[in-house]
Image (cartoon, rainbow, N blue to C red; front, side, top):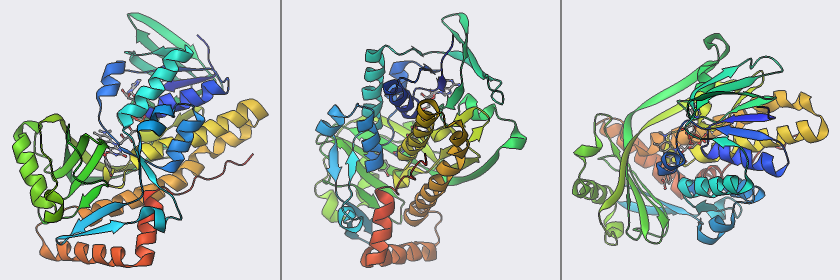
Length: 394
Ligand code: RFL
Ligand code: PHB
């Protein structure tokens, strides 16, 4: 088999890149290790930056998102028993975010890919990358018992943190930067109306909590938990009791509880691989970097990588600008590190790291300072809505 771009992974990065290339007539094949149902069963991000929604519109997969997504103009920070609103729209010069789940984004992209008839292989096994340093790279894999070999011009490694793409780079050519946090997030989804119209990020002496949502009758809540905790340790009742403890009373008055329909624990990690390109292999999204979810940046950062790679490939195929491809890593990394910084900062500000009351008081003072200063609110807002994308020079 032959194609122009082989895409490893059918998460949001791989599907979005594939869709954008399809619309430009740039041939691509997606190779995914899991089944479509498995990919759709992962409940992850919920907040989309304007850059991400604009890109989904360019990809012509935005009809349902624009109908069902909820525009949010702000969110609340709760600390020391108080609730303070961050007017994101006001302090970012008019920008907003859209609450629309990653599962729905993925579903919309999968439907568009299936409708277009573009080639894709799910349940691929033993995916292997070859000759990425040459001008004739290829990918081989086993599908339904047969071995396949795809020859291509470029490989996009969109296969997440545990994927094969980054792991196939020799260790002396890649530098890894990492911080693992000493706690996780326990998340539940419940078919109940959200406790508030906007998200609430809560700092509390018992640990962080987050109230989010997917729709008017679907809530997503998180509490900071120990890395030793297992999902089985957390009955629904224990979860709700803990959430109530960590929220201010004016919020919990409106809390509607109910059975969880999903419950999972995610560890928190900051991670960046440098560079993000190796010959003809380009790492995209979680394959190259991970952020703790506190800043809602993971999926949005994946989208900005896709934006960069898509525009470079378009210039490569439509204008013969092969020379620009070498800029991919440096363009992406400039934005990646700023989002890493914001996610690390939000995580440091809002979580319980120890029993040290001094640390908690400093966090409360920092929250009080940022939420009472125009400059502080501006800093939070401009990062939360997403820093601008770098123009791709033609
Ligand atoms: P994904 O979504 O991990 O998709 C990668 C795809 O590659 C497949 N794959 C392979 N395919 C072929 N061959 C192989 N050898 C392969 N190995 C893996 C996988 O099956 C998968 O389908 O990466 P992508 O597309 O870059 O998208 C990134 C986002 O998914 C990610 O940034 C966010 O979901 C991060 N994240 C969150 N971000 C937020 O903004 N808010 C959140 O609340 C939030 N919660 C989360 C998260 C990530 C989590 N992970 C990774 C454990 C919660 C969790 C649990
Ligand atoms: C979510 O809705 O899952 C969500 C929202 C905001 C975050 C993280 C997760 O910062």
